[in-house]
Image (cartoon, rainbow, N blue to C red; front, side, top):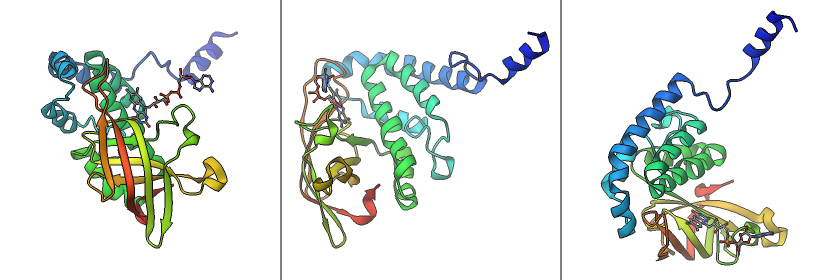
Length: 240
Ligand SMILES: Cc1cc2nc3c(=O)[nH]c(=O)nc-3n(C[C@H](O)[C@H](O)[C@H](O)COP(=O)(O)OP(=O)(O)OC[C@H]3O[C@@H](n4cnc5c(N)ncnc54)[C@H](O)[C@@H]3O)c2cc1C
């Protein structure tokens, strides 16, 4: 092949994933420095105590690590999904529990909001997720892990929203979260197609956080049971 064609082909190719852009490299470096300096020294204590340091969590928010992909117009950092992954890798190297907390916030909660939430939900909840509110993703149940479609949690429609009944298990951030994306089936007659996501706030009537699991690892990341007993969710908090 003539030399010029080879050069052209190389130009058209996207950069390999192992080569970071200058911006990504700077971002990774700053998260790495923070993680080694602030997170790593606390890892053992937090794991032994099965408790995540609230001041450290505050620092995650202050550094913009809890809304990496959230657009700037809502107060987020306006970064990319790939940047979230870089941050999670660096933080996990220092402490796996911290990595899980940052992971759920960015790649599950914020990401689902970006894809499925109404503009109203984004305006109400993105600024809080960026500033001080931890999110949780509540899908699994005692009889519904890998087989998520087998969920027993039910949503019954009312005149102004839905009522949730059921139990969720092993929900990361359950103890500290202020906001929960909860999956329930609103129409079991059509099987998994009846499953809908609901945004539930901590303290909502009929909702409470139950038992916290005593785990063998990543102990500073809470893994909890959630209980819903006639928990009313207003229609504007239904997400897709
Ligand atoms: C620390 C921790 C944090 C978690 N955080 C969350 C959270 O934030 N939100 C949430 O919703 N859930 C969470 N989970 C739950 C997690 O998603 C489930 O544990 C997972 O989906 C697996 O479900 P299970 O434990 O019921 O295992 P099962 O589904 O019972 O699977 C047990 C084993 O059987 C295998 N298996 C299952 N089905 C098949 C099949 N058809 N063919 C072959 N093999 C199969 C699986 O690979 C696995 O090895 C968490 C769990 C843990 C341990």
